[in-house]
Image (cartoon, rainbow, N blue to C red; front, top):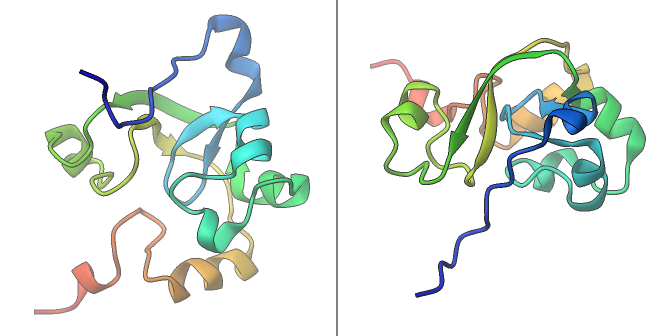
Length: 125
């Protein structure tokens, strides 16, 4: 039985220096993956694919912790880290960096808070 999900790739120790984390959704990929495919969660508004300047602005080499999610929609870890609704993959627990104001505006216009949660989910009661 074939799975219709993308396979989660775990980087080798030799690849660790080339890893970067998206400052919006925290997905961790090789820099070459961001260059080729962009961010699988944020590409619609960050437009990282084939854009080295945007990759430098919107991703960081400085992050802490790593969690691999195979089924984000049913994972309690994904819910705890506010990653439910994202694609399967490797995610940083904490990303260090400052997202430029232009990108912050684009993120907010798309209804996503910087911590990964939807703005609509944060409406006052």
